[in-house]
Image (tube, rainbow, N blue to C red; front, side, top):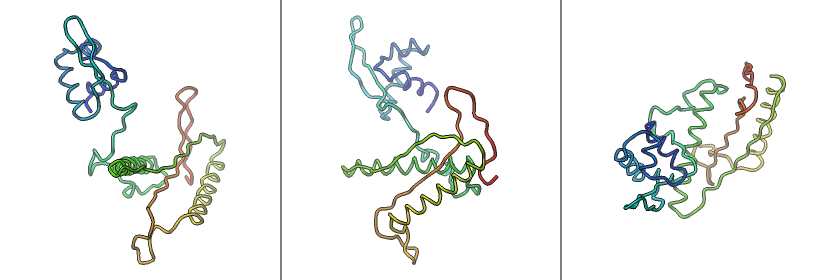
Length: 196
């Protein structure tokens, strides 16, 4: 999405008119109207009522969603593929894997909506700290073992011995942890990765 369009969508979190957008963004009302109609046609904006201004009524527009996520599928063959990243402890691998997860969830959600059903997911988020790389490595090993044990006890195999699909609905589990810098506070010091 081009910068002007992104700015329009960001400002349309609350209903807003082309006149107000033009004044705030420093463009003509006609140019903003053009982009508003395009964004509404593509589903980024929705009509949000009308308001009287002097002797005319202005159309108001608002963002269709609280937030937008761009699908990695938009990149086609240029999208990152986790199968092509040899270092499974790298940021590139994690980003490629999270892109696939985003595509899976978006596709599954669309399919469920078409069928009138729900797309069932499970999410868990936690924040914690490690004082040493040894603590981090021990955590990674223990988490891997614990998750593998839970999968073995509570799920069916993904593939049959002949490599064919096993019965049941397929699910994907992605478990990761990574250092991050809190939005406020001192920056995190990044040390070597697990195993490195």
